Length: 97
Image (cartoon, rainbow, N blue to C red; front, side):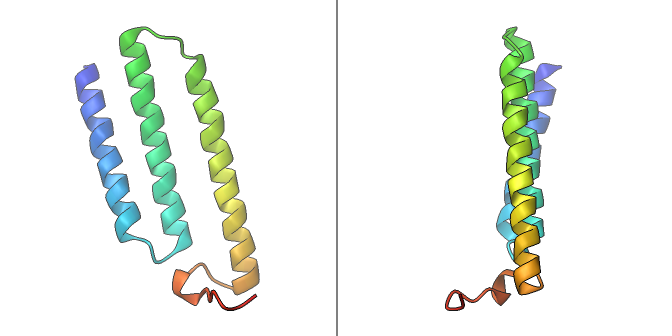
């Protein structure tokens, strides 16, 4: 059963990586695919830890890091939309202060 879960998580990880590579026009799409990668890695680590019978404390630490990454991404998205009016990457001018 664990082998199927590991295979499923690897397929989900590869799909989220493809989504991150293909949907790079909007910041929100990029953040959602990064969050999917993080959750998939969390699931994969959880399956490996349960299979090997290891301590599950590290999963809680990794979950806290995932939440902090998500909050930081949302705060950047809000500040960019507030300052530029949209989250489209082509609208950001590097010459503008």
